[in-house]
Length: 136
Figure 1: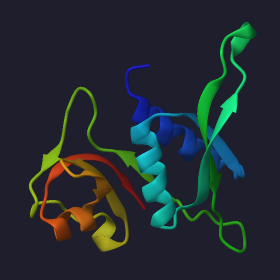
Figure 2 (figure 1 turned 90 degrees about the vertical axis):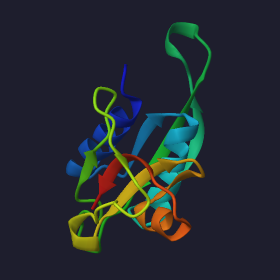
Figure 3 (figure 1 turned 180 degrees about the vertical axis):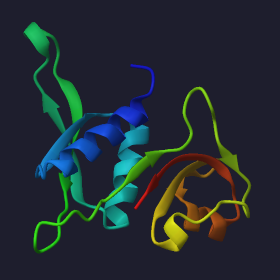
Figure 4 (figure 1 turned 45 degrees about the horizontal axis):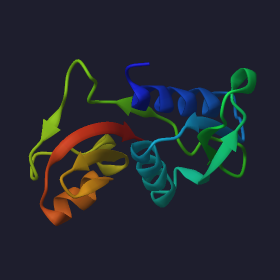
């Protein structure tokens, strides 16, 4: 699978559309950082790394189990996820050029020279980078 981040975002988007309580995503360091940001921004309840048995006797695989978050009447907290930078078209922003997501109501997730962070944090630190996705 060439685009692991798009796969993660699609799994989360599909799970929230059918009101699942949790979703499993294959683990990587970048996906862990994205999950950490989603939790700190209040879009998901939490996440943890679990091992699931491999197929047909192969070694166990590490997965990120993300607990999804819903409102008091079952409405989705995470209403939209959009992949911005793709393998075929990378999107970069300078430190002062990152546009706000949904007029400031959403969050952009960037990978910078100082690690993975939100667009607001990158602007505070004064660094630019590649925009991975937008969340609202």
